[in-house]
Image (cartoon, rainbow, N blue to C red; front, side, top):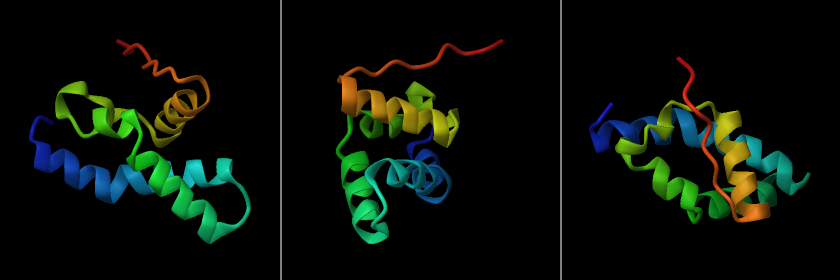
Length: 86
């Protein structure tokens, strides 16, 4: 998938909502507050910037893996991407 419009559509429909759900759990119990915080934090993250670039191929990672990368970025200021399995 190399087209930026295709990646944007995939992000908006499939990937981002699932990653936000994973992040919400991290931020606590108050559903509305947690969702707003999760959305704001994810969209301003370096991970989201990289995820929007089709060349990175990050769009193929699971929402759980993307959430783990996000948490590492937030907590440790480190972004490590998993090696591709052959």
